[in-house]
Length: 166
Image (cartoon, rainbow, N blue to C red):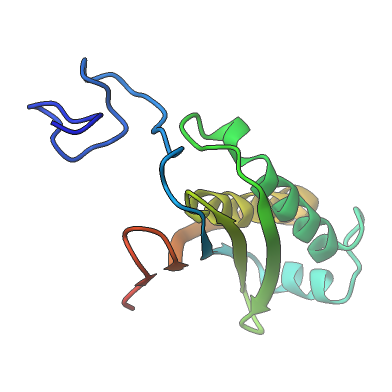
């Protein structure tokens, strides 16, 4: 059996021979260019969206702060997700798209060159950005929801490229 394989867990590499969680050893994996893009949606009242777009939220520029929060979260993902490797992130890009009414879609693309991917960093980035939007707007709209967090695209690595089918 390969390292991490057991009779009970033949293909799950995050388990040791006792069936307990472990951080996968990536030291023998080659460095490759990798990227991941994730998204999530913040739903809110139309009035809240207008306040954000007009820069009139009392706590300041919501999207600028959410963008920085997403970048910071991507860089600190291993502190939040126990089995994530600390990696050298090459870049993080946070984008916002509103539907003109009640939905703000947050997109994060994270890149690296290394032995492991950045899917978790991209997902962490969009969720931290979304939670920051909520935090900055909750005084005017406590009914906001954060939903639909998902990986959209991943490139590089042993498993190859992935694009979510819609």
